[in-house]
Length: 513
Image 1: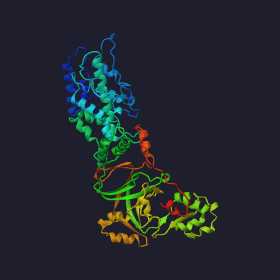
Image 2: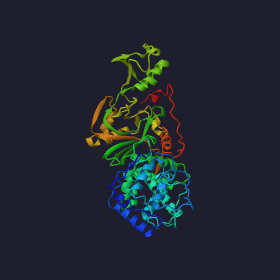
Image 3: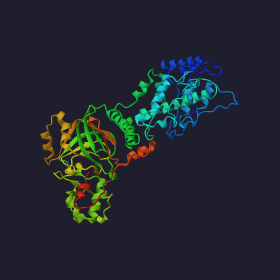
Image 4: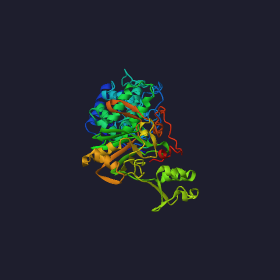
């Protein structure tokens, strides 16, 4: 992509100014101050667009520029242009960084002719300390680049080349850092080219304040940031914390007064008011073979008390009919009824070996009752995956460390409390909730205002008092994200997938939603 600088940009007012080998340092300083004044005074970096794709970290060590004594030294603008190409900057940022310097007249952005400006030192500080935000300094600075070159002047030869090289390094690193900090690094998610962020940074009178404003203010992110600061550099949990900070960069703060959030890897549910938890409880989520999906914009629309259970097609095909084909006597233990259309079918009268598990005329239902798979209440959601929250008669599963045991739906550890939390503003008492849950008669209570629900995936989670809990990478998503953003292998999680088995004792557990 070719970038064309628009003549309306304030920085282009200085495009004709060049620094040659006879330029005095004070002339360079005046020109630099004018550039900064134009940038801070409201001028925009207009028309700067570039295709910024992810590439491998810039992990080559910095090579000090060498001047050829047989050639006359280059003026500063020509020096900078020699560094506007790989390996000095990332290949995907060549168009954008080149356009930035074209609008500055190829003058340094961070050096005033005598020293690195305070703004340049601010940029370097944030880049070299990128690990504080769960990022890698080597993504923004060359390996070993731990300080800005000191005691240099804008003089011909190697020193001028050193200024130009370091100035370009800061610009290249800042452009990438602003986007990564604000929008995350995952290439599978949509991101901007970062130029609007760089434009604001150049116009901001408080550059450090602007960069800091891009850091997520979410309490979870801030808690993980504090945890990262306490971990030793060789502690492999640092990678795990950084991966989860990456996820929080993409999550927009909730604007809902009330909402429910399920965190899948920690098997945990929170009911929140203005983002602050009012109710906590354990949950059981989908096993590895039947993952609970990540849902960001779902709603609880009604509560179905004393619910019956219509077995979903996946469980019918993969569980029920194979059991009927192999051990039909177990069907009675499931408390299920088989139907063909609206007619009840005696399962012992059917030759199930001839029934296609996927394409057949049968379906199965379980009536309400104390041992029903959905327990006393189902919390109906709007997603297209037939996933919902529900009660469960098997309380032992909520005491397990690994609670990835269901067929995809989320079993709620204290369903009566969640139901009352949802209905108390509508005048329901805890006693009314429990009476409906145990009545054995199916009733539906529609919420006047559907309740927002998210199902997220955070393997490091900040609990009450700032304590960080580490969950299991139940679906291997830490590993996938770490590979996409080239962040190194996350620590191993002690997770063993639940195994399905057809047994007298375990059949009901394995067939639960």
